[in-house]
Length: 155
Image (cartoon, rainbow, N blue to C red):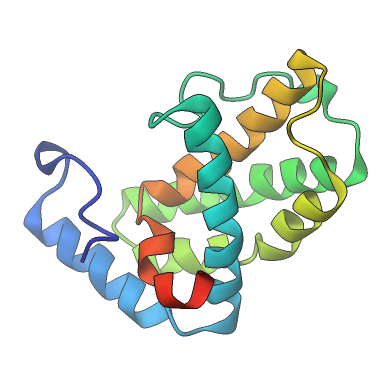
């Protein structure tokens, strides 16, 4: 329940909370989702620490043209492909489908963290990478605070 009660009470209906909780409960044991949760914990820690609780809202799409590393380009392209699907599913209350689509991002996020140093000295490039991670964080965060879902498995 903590995973789906992370938003302000005024921003969600009880029915919406129930539907999101059911979606999270359904998907939480699947291997792809557990992997996404592990990676999302890293994304959330970086984004929250650098961009604050609002995540990527203020920097969305900032510095797209600065992303040159193959791993960051792959994540950007995957997010461009998956993001609209997640948004469409979420806006129609199909949270399980949105979370399944989000799980498809796990390989790209893993590769990003393996191959890319987010906190580079170049401030513009660092901001572009943070914007990318912030966008990812916000897409998933709109459904659930994923580390809360499988906390015992990702620590």
